[in-house]
Image (tube, rainbow, N blue to C red):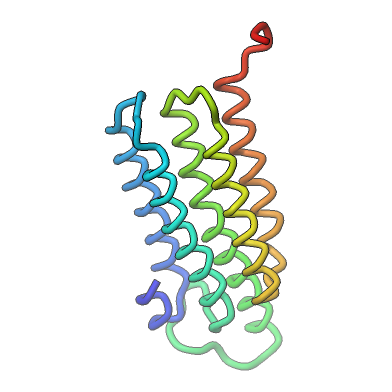
Length: 164
């Protein structure tokens, strides 16, 4: 994120998000399916998620371009491009923690998914607070889609209609 702020380009942010997701996916695949330290893992994901959501909000208003270095020229087209990049940056930064929750739901056998949904609720609250603070219109749809993805993954993998 620091490199992206210095370069004022979206490329390091995208690379950082993809590498973080791949690293987390690799770590989550190595943990046993009957993990007893789930609250610690969820706390860690919550902390990282808070960083990504806040950093996405802070960096979204800093005049990023898709790949160019330095500030873009001050014309209407560059302002529209900055708005698109800011929307993409904020949406990507909020989707990553929810993807980690989907991986947890898919990997771990949980009798009660309440802690995962509790963390998802905290993430939604953080994202909406950042949306209100920095006026990011792309973040609420990304949060809604990500939350629906977590709920769908939990329902599809763990819900059995014949159990009461």
